[in-house]
Image (cartoon, rainbow, N blue to C red; front, side):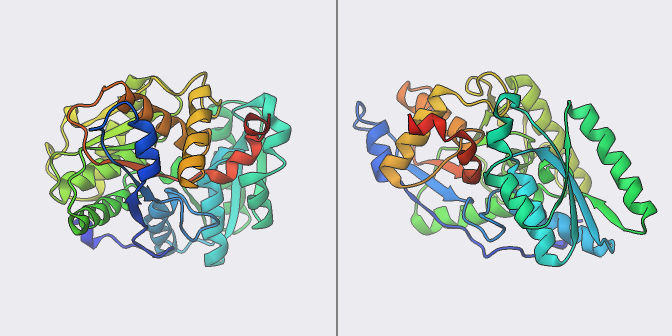
Length: 340
């Protein structure tokens, strides 16, 4: 099938805004008069309970779910998962029951994570929560058991994958790529790099595939890993790219190995553990542009962008784009980083 033939269920108004950040650009380039202008794509501003990048993916996933006649959705993530929050919001909007299996990636912050942010929103929106103490394997076991229990109860459950980052969900960022290309043409700019945080891989894979599919062969998509070493995350992106090829017809060589760029230098101890550089980046963007990032995803991605620009680690940088994938609600669980 062609990209245009895949059913999509609009869940937010598009396009999201795109603009330059002059104050941040000046701060980053204070020792380089010829430094690049930094732009931002505001995918944090959408209509599913404070928005974020998962909304674009869920437009395709929920279209498929409704086509299959579901009345219940199930998904998983961390206690402060942005993906879970947006999935629960979409389910409520569409009149579907939602069940969420959550684990805690930062045990020492359990109290803070259960007292605010995304988890609080999940509760308000009526999700059925299941807290699991354990690793991904235990979460998967609970997901499987829960799915069968709901079937036995006469429900028609639909499992939304982690981050909605399968081949279908990632089409949301192919659509975003087309949106960006139009915005760049209207502003008469030709960005050299686009930065984003890379977790479950669907956003980077979809964006990269979309840019090449819709004709931009030059821009470099730089994923900043938020949780694992470079090679692991590269493989995650490769896997999703292959899944996209199972959904739509694309040339095998449309995206090359050289196109898959991931840095594993900025995630720190592990997923959801804050870093000093990310905290500093959050403060800088907040003070200079009035935009809120988060310690789990966008703070680490911005820390990578700032470091690479300041230390001239990019080839011919020009009009650099930062994709804001959302996550600000989770910042409340890390208030102590900013209130000292």
